[in-house]
Every structure is written in C-alpha cells, then in structure tokens.
Image: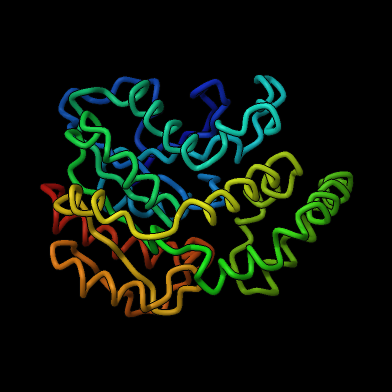
Length: 311
C-alpha cells in the first residue's frame, strides 16, 4: 500500500514542533469514516525522523493514519519559523513535565474529539504516555497504549543510567563545544562523516538526516537537559498510575537493554499480573529504530491487529 508521508512544523505550547504524518497532514480533515489514529511519542533524542522507516512500514500494513510528534526543542525549526525559546529562560518547556504537557496540548489542538487513539511510546515516550493517561479526557479516547522498551522506573540505576549520571553529565560542555565545531564544517563534510559513522556501525545511512539535526548545539543541549531530568524524576515505578491504566497497556521489553534491565521485566511480571507484557525474543536493541525498524513494524502490526478492531 502506497502512503503519503508529510513532514512539517506546527506551534505547540509556544514551541515550533516537528511532526511527520502518514495518510494526511495533521491540519487536513481526516476522512469521515476514519475513527482511529496511531500517535507515536519518541524516546530521547526525540526526533520523529528516526522513526520514519518503522512507521512507513507500519502504515503500509495497517492503513491507518499515523502521526509522530517530536519532543519540544529536539528538532531545529527552519529559518522561516520562529526560533526555539531558549532553554535557560524556559526550562519548563523542555523538562519531562513540559514534554508531557506538550503532547497533551498537541492532542487537544490537532486530534479530532471523535477519533480514538492508539498510542506508541518508545523509551521515555512510555513514561510520557503513562503521565498522559492520568488526564481523564485523554484516557477516554485511547484504545490501546504500547510501551516499547519502557523507561518507566529506576533509570539512574540502570547500566546506561549510571554512565549518564557518573560520566556523561560531566562531559556535556565538551560535547556542546564539539557539536559547535562540527556545525561549522561544510554540510557535505558533515554528511560524509556521519555516513561513515553509520556504515562502520553497520546501520542504515538514512539516519544521517535526523542526526544532522541532533548534533546542533541548541538541540543537543535540550536533549541532554531532558536526559538528566529523566535521571532525577524517573525513579520508583508509579504503581498507582500503572494500575489505573493497566487495561490499556501493553509493555514490550528487551533482553539486552541497558536502560531497562531484565530484572525490571521480571519485577513487572511478578508484581503486576494485570499488566500485559512481552519479552523480545529477537534481541533487538533498546534503540530499535537504528537497526530493526522493519522487524519491529511487523511485530507492532500483529499486536495492534490482535488487540484492536483494525485489520
């Protein structure tokens, strides 16, 4: 099934926000008989561009409109649009709570009231969805919420979390300086270096485009600010929130996940019998979009068909 992909920027909570859609732009009217919409909330970095291959295949299999909304401040708007509000004066736009409010405002502004939502949250996007489901109006519109490689507890205690809090946070000024140096190189050189990087790591070179955006100092600063905020705030599991939303949830855990160790899955299955979980049998990486977009789309398509009226 051929699908039309559209990318653009809209203003949400005062922030110029990158959105990618399949099956019609967000400001177009959905078909009158269209009752469902899939909305993806990304991980961190929160650029929808990393999910293009994954969502293109998912749309081709399901035929349902799919929207992916980038995190506030994680994609630099074009020169024709207003600049991003500076982080220093607007931290509440870019921290974890700000990203939750950003997604709630996006739904309120652009998703028609009569359309039911199928949510997909990857990594910190899973935590954002759990927080969104505390909004009763939003919750009433959700058919199902799929939390992929969900960073919803004890992030700083995970192997990767320990690296972020113990080492990376002290290197942020150096990282931002190197990012600035990178951006003053000719664009052709930037693309070449990133293409070599992905080829060496045996990853598709179409990741060059979203990564070009990521290494801009303004974006990288926002990404790292959110990452450190996650370490501070995503601690013990929100038992109450999980229980209240359990009927809507499906959690997909990895077996080799540096952000969500296997013990987190074991604890979930032992303590929360009412929450549906699945353990990845394919050893997909936490950042599955870098290597396993098509394979993950096949799995998601089957799950959505199984749990909803879509066919």
